[in-house]
Length: 342
Image: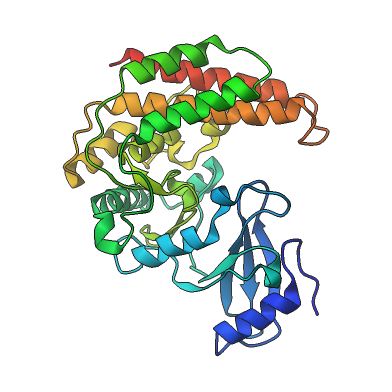
């Protein structure tokens, strides 16, 4: 049996694949695509060169609710007949005796992941606005779906999405950070006090941006990926997150400085909002609040990463904690800027 990466029991998984995929050609190989604290993603290739993607939780002790494979499988399966492109699902395995944890398998979707500024520069300038328009149209299509119509009405609570997020991440800072960050408290108070009323409810992807989509070579979205944070609630949180990740600010810091949409040709955040507004009937006049909310939320998440570095949980990477602290401060300042614009 060929060597397999951590997280795969090759014999057991190969047998399951053989029973699930009638034309599978043995042997199969396994290659880790993405790993870490998030769900693990593996490329599976059979002897005929046909490729699949396997998703499973990270190894070790994990919070099952945060890495629910059956839930991801259900979401993608429900979206398959809609206008939102998702990878075709092959099957779900909930028998933990096979691979120590549930997993599901999808067909591999050919295309491009446009992750960094260099990736954006490599995209044909004529295709950059095509990618932007397809990205926005796909998000508007997702938000227009009635969850009940595709069997997802019980996926999550319908109301108070942003209020619940504010409570969750504030609690994580209060209980998990080793320092006091006054701007976290200030913005939490302002966000809570100024929260816009939720306009109905819909499917919230939870982390929608260009590099979480597989793009076709013609510039269209081939498949929306990474559904682990998907729930029901205030869909404008997705739009606020997309604008945050767009990277318009010339003085941007940290990961936001390396996003592909900073490259000329992908358009400005104002053009993104105009396109979305033309495709959606939701009022986006309070969008600065949602962008501020996403900056604050990402700052809280990033502070958690800084704390793990400070505790030595991320290995010997001296100086990274200070660098991450600068990113936290930048995100909070940006959040304040957007609230001041309202």
